[in-house]
Picture 1: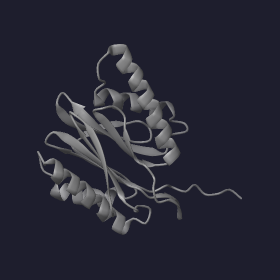
Picture 2: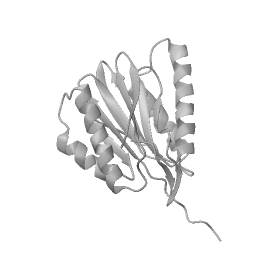
Picture 3: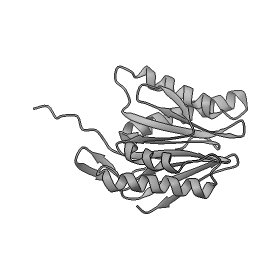
Length: 200
């Protein structure tokens, strides 16, 4: 008897603020109704000014991030300059599109600093690249986006953006059984990338 495909759940958000981007995701790894782990890692540092957060199959997101990070390091060595987030987003989109017949089951929010301004890009499993000021992906995305859209404004401070990311993820966790068990936050600015964890 064939096993029906189970969709892994998650909630991930990306929000720009006055001089950077906040990326956040909860830690629960689920497979259908089965809870696999309470300590999954869904935030990724790609370069010193670019990070990503993903929802979907953990294996697919890990492989994708490793491949993109490796290609980006090679580009940096070849050009002797940092690779901007829009170039990394396009590279990631090409890698995902190459898998279109057997797509990577992951949605990604890639963000960083581009020409001294924060930038957010959303990628679907087929590699579409959509720029935005904020985004949510995963099974809890519909719940989280309502909170983000109601409170987002231009030029948030870093703390306001962090608080909004945490609030939106907590909102999704309250209603999405596939999300929960803590929140990982990645703060990307022109000078550094910092990571912190919060309770749900």
